Amino acid sequence: MPGHGHLRGIEELTGQLEYIEATWKRTEEHIAQGHSLEETLADANYPRYSDVGTNLHDGNIKAIYKQIKRAL
Image (cartoon, rainbow, N blue to C red):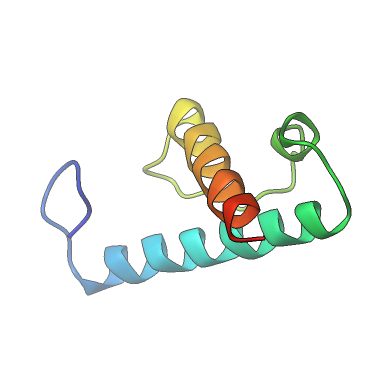
């Protein structure tokens, strides 16, 4: 179950997990190429999850970017 919103079924949860995993991988690629957070956020080819608005989407990228950078 996501932290916000309505209860979901397995299909929705699977879709959300795939979105997070794809966002994580794409962010790793940006960091490996030496891109800044701003450059990373400007990538229009990030995967989209229908239930995540632009503000949450950018917030997800920022959070993932910071987590990866801290681990380096």
